[in-house]
Amino acid sequence: MTITNTNKYNGWTNRETWLCNLWFDNFDFTDLMDMFEGCEDKGDILNTIEDYIKDYVEEFVESYISPNDYRAAHGFIQDMLNSAIQEIDFRDIAEHYVDDVADELELVNEDAKELASVA
Image (cartoon, rainbow, N blue to C red; front, top):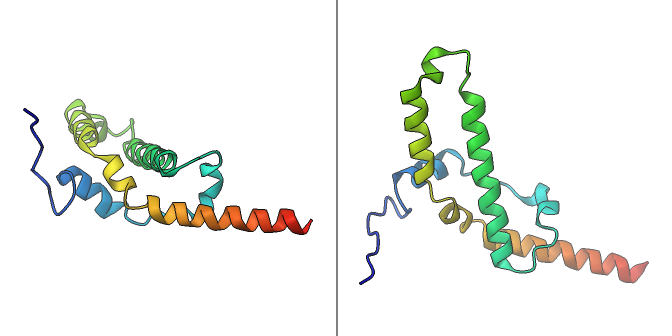
């Protein structure tokens, strides 16, 4: 018997994923196309986007919490943040970008082929 999580939140995997997308909904990968070099299909693109968003959010949280601020460095607060971050479904968020990135990557590759044929 397979149990499926039906506790969606506003169409997202859960509340943590929804909140993450709400606050970081402006990812623009058009200036980061080099990041997708070597991606062979949408699965590779999806993995790259997922890793990028996860790293971005974790670095943001890390930079926001000053180890010199006792309140921010307090173990309880840190544990709560880490717990919430672990619940974020970064793949769910990445899926909202993959088609646009794949289309942009295709355009970049076509332009590169055109330039190569002219040279």
